[in-house]
Structure formats: structure tokens, C-alpha cells
Amino acid sequence: MIATLLVSLFTFIELNCENLFDTQHDTLKNDYEFTPNGSYHWTHTRYWHKLNHIGQEIVALGDDSIHGWQLPDMVALCEVENDSVLRDLTQRSLLRKAHYKYFITNSPDERGIDVALLYQPASFSPIRTYAIRIKPSKNMRPTRDILYTCGQIINNDTLHIFVVHAPSRYGGEKISRPHRLLVAQYLADAIDSVRNKSPQARIIIAGDFNDYTSSPSLEAIYTHNMKDISAKAIGSHGAKGTYRYQGEWGSLDHILCSPPACNNIISCYIGDLPFLLEKDEKYGSVHPMRCYQGPRYQNGYSDHLPLVARFVIH
Image (cartoon, rainbow, N blue to C red):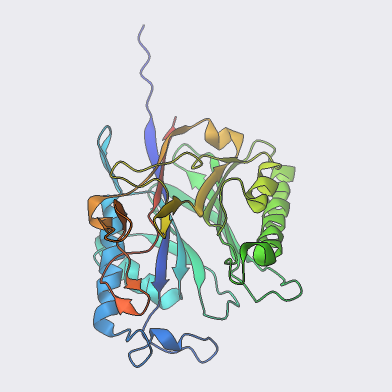
């Protein structure tokens, strides 16, 4: 007797979009730079080019040399401004025929930057979602909310997702470290809360942590039985990290999983597609083809490369 085991793939993407703003000034936010008359001259044309670039990137990341192409099931996004941007991305850009749904936070971040989660309704059915507000500590600016979503995947297992964009290293790594440790503590508390109800919960945490795999904020999360499955991720076209600064590769972006989710991981790598890269004239090799280099418009994609994780679902 031969038993046939039916399996499906679940593709999860993490991507920092590099300042995906609309062109309108929000009176409650400091987003003047990204308006047509601002220092970045952020016009409607540039905005729509950016949306289509992000859409092109997401679709292309569904390609897999072994398993063929299918749309990514879920995409965690950092540096997106608001609901209007996500509506344009999912309904009016090159991505419109992909029929993604989404959740986005409405954070107190001074620039108006938020995190979001795109998902395919055919492979994920949401149960609930909410934002976790970070109460700033002394001398800390308001930061991005953590987005929490849980729902059922196609085998009826429940998946818990956290999308995070931790405070930057502005002012120096040591001075700003407590701010990222604070976010890590909020994450740890949320993980514990999920496990109190479901000890074997399948949990994915993804985003821009503004820290490296061995940094204290990540180490704090590992103590809550989470593993960085992207710790050794590299690309296939020269990328050794998701970000390159002064010729040095590093990964500020991470995907962490609980043991039950880790059991289903097939691969995790950096999606350094050739069109996302350009030659690094100063330091050699390649670097991400970013949208802006300082104030200069480059008509690129992002200063971060995406992470791609593929899971098998039985």
C-alpha cells in the first residue's frame, strides 16, 4: 500500500520598503520631505514608480527554482506610511491582480512610518489582529507599534505573526540600545501571552530590528524559545546581508520562529534578485539598488534586500 502525502508550500517575505510615503502631507506627522515640494521632491510619478517596483519585487520573489512560481502567501512590510499607500499598492499598482489583503498599524512614530502585513486569503484566514503600542521610556521618541495577527493556514493550524520595526541606532548603538531592548521586552511579553493559551503555538516574528543576530535585543527574544531562522541567510547573487553600509554587509532584518514553526522550514535566504542590485563603484561587488542615495533620486527599490522563508505544510 502506497500512501500519498499531500504537502503545500507557504512562502513568507520580510521587506523594508525604504520610505514608502504617499505625496500628501499629514498635518500630525513630520513627513514634509516626502512631498512634491519637499527636499526629496516626492512627486506622484516617483510615488507610482515606487509602488510598481515594490509590486514587481513581491511577485518576483515567488519564483523558486525547485518548486516553481507561486505568489508569496504573506509579506511583512516595514517603512510604509499609511492605509492609503497599502490600498494603492494592493489595488492600483502592478500587484493589483494578486488580490492581497492587508493589515497596517497607525503608530505614533513622528515621521508617520508604520508596519503592515499582506496576506493571500486563499492561504490564510485571519482570526484577529491588533497593534501593540510601545510606551516610550525616558529620552525615547515615539516608535512604531508591533502588529500582531493570528489566523488559520490551509491545514487549519493557527499561525501567530508579529511584525516589528524597532527604533533606529540614531545617536549611536549604545545610547539607543535601551530603546530596542524595550521593544524586545514587549515582544517577549506578547510571545508569553500567546504560549499561555497555546504552548505549542506556531509563531513568526519578522521585521527590521535595527540590530544584528548577536545583539542584546535579539538575544533577549531567544530566551523565550524563539530562533532566528535568517541568522545565516545569504543571497545567490552576491548579498551576504540584507543591508550594506560602507562596503560591509550586515542583516538588520530578521525572521524568528518558535520550534513548531521551525519544524516546517525548508529554506530561508536573502532575495537578492539581480534587478534589486547594482554595482558598488566605491567598495566593489554589489549593493541594494535603493530609491534614494542621500538626497539623490535613484529610481531604485529599497536600501534593504528582502528575506524569503519557505515552509512546508502537511
